[in-house]
Amino acid sequence: MPHGNQLEWTGFLSAMTLVLVRVSGMVAFAPFFSSTALPMRVKAVFVGVVAYLLAPLVAALPHAQAVLSFSALLGELSVGLVYGLILTLLNEMLMFAGQIAGMQFSFSLVNLMDPASSIQTPLLGELFQLMGTLVVLGAGLDRILLASMVRSFHAAPLGCYALAPSTALAIVRAASGIFLAAVELAAPVLAATMLLEVAVSLLGKLSPQLPVMNLTVPLKTLTGFVILSGSLALWPRFIEVRFASLLDLAERLIATPGAGPGIGLGG
Image (cartoon, rainbow, N blue to C red; front, side, top):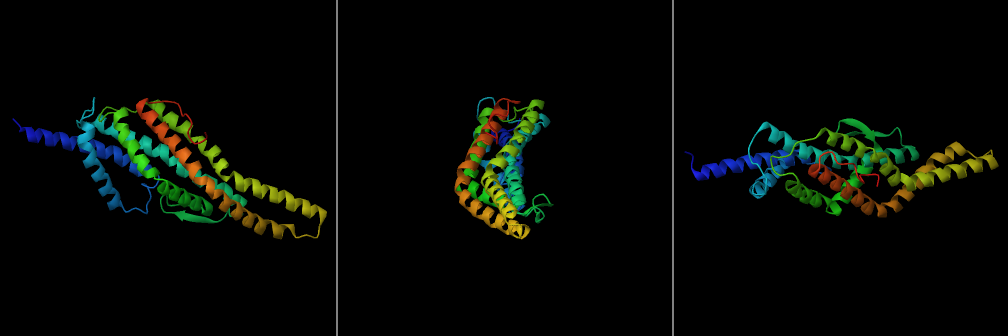
């Protein structure tokens, strides 16, 4: 018969593998952790260390089943993907807000190659994502994400989660908040540039000799940058609230598969 230490070591490796799968799903999509600026080896070491440290703790929780099986692996991967896909909505919101602002800045044709997706993305979309990442790091939201991932082992014990079809529908419904949140973030720039367009149009009517077309683009760009710089003071609070809402939604989806979208991004 196998020695007791061998049984403990086998159970530890099984638990570590399951934790590794769950954390890997989160790291693959979550903001900051999914960035291609982080080398793959660094991500692999990070995931391995987290799995090694958490395995003995989460395996001792009530109802945990540290047994390797296809259903257990699929369930752990589903938990990580639910976290990652929910939180990646924050990046998509920032990208869409940047695209809206870029149209008002007359930068709609200025695109960059996004290294993460290998597709062309708007210039201001990339800028908004970078500033959003700085807010996430500066506010310590990456540590809050890891703490939430640890709490997920209480809501969905190791090896026990089963993905419900309604969970995918809840994620799709939550994605609809991207548009409202992006408009809210870009609202100061939208309002300022729209008022500027109205003012320049009235001046053009009052003075037909005024070169309206030559004035509109540089004035909109300068005004947009000034308003954007002033509105950056509101970004930390805005992003923290949305990040907390998405984390709350992810935790509720893990605890109750198929739960409604709740606040999400648009709240």
